[in-house]
Image 1 (cartoon, each protein chain N blue to C red):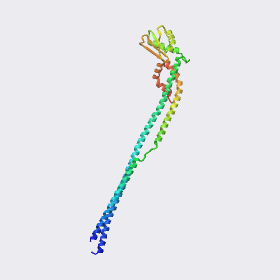
Image 2: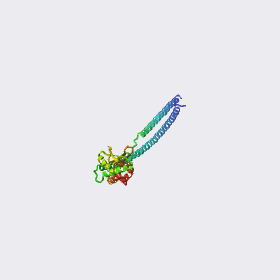
Image 3: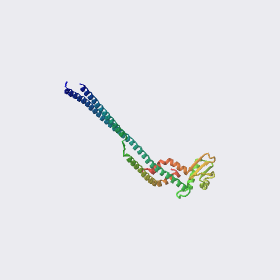
Length: 207
Length: 98
């Protein structure tokens, strides 16, 4: 083999070897780039899922928060109205107590407390029946009660004790075994217990 | 012949170097892609997700409470007017019974 031929052959072989290597390198890089694109695309999809899941969670929490705060606001709104109603009822009770006090103190010319008290005593005597009856009332009503006792008969007396009440009278038998309560305080309490739905309707109905 | 063998050996070495270089480059490409993927996912975990409804909720709450306050005032005013009308009736029923 001549030297020229040998050189040409060797160059062809070298070129072929390098060509194979470069092709393989190209294939390796091509595969790496394809794999890299897959990795990034997959990450983007995962990121979208993460963001979507977070958004859904935040939306869900937000809806719960909206519902909770709205419910709390509705409760507070109802409480404001209930507080206003309670204030009105408390005010009514205070006015009634003041008016009863005024009547018992003889300051209201439209009411005859003497007659009212006499009527209450008669009711009590009728309820307790025969026998000695004692009248118990306010200290400031003692004279009036004594006058009523005299009007009602010898078996009616005034108890030396007094009661811290707005007005009215409590009657007892001689041994204090039976009592008949006919005070303004008790009558008002009883009335309010029985008639509160009616009062509420009269005052707040239609508002 | 010895020069041919030598040339082939040199070419084989160069071929190996080319392939190794490509493999290293491929490794860097994959690593870079993995880092990019990690960054994308971390960013997705941290990206702020906000809604503007808080302001709307507050307005809704204020509206509800303001309405309740107005209604309470109106109720208080009208009820107090009615009280004046029913006090005498109630007093009569308390004192004399129904």
